[in-house]
Length: 187
Image 1: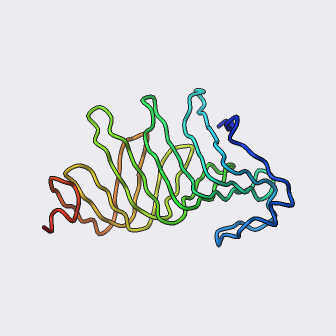
Image 2: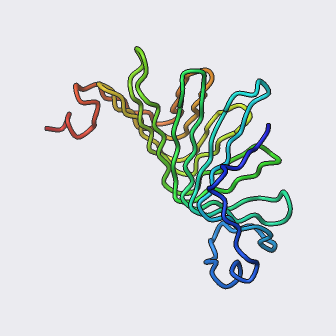
Image 3: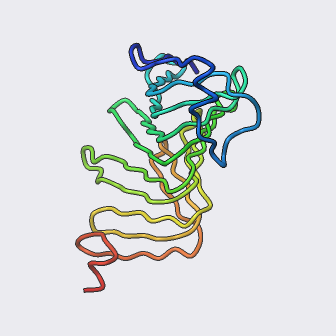
């Protein structure tokens, strides 16, 4: 997988500013911050040279050369031939580029845009792990899925972007309604 940094989006800060201005996160990896970037965009291409995903954030801190990266306000777009397949956001993320893993930390939202006959899908979950080589997203947290006419709630989530499948595993509750929202059925 090849990573390319956006041309104007990278601003490197002096090492003194790293220590003075950084606010520690409870998810911060051990070790010293060796790189900090404010307002970054990373592009990844697959073996075919096509854009596979784009990761943006307000700040990236790398712990050791080629080590784990803690990201503030991550914004992940997963692409396919037709454009954006999924858009994921969370308050923080831990990126392990060598393992091709992105752990979205905290409340996580995934949106699959409407395209052709496919309807817009919104997933609300927490602590979602995205394998950036296979584009499979998983979570053990309670999750909801909303589409026009459908609302689902359950625990355990698996989204296969390439296979276009979404699964909720345990205690699944499904409601069919015109709005696709749980509240509408309670009126």
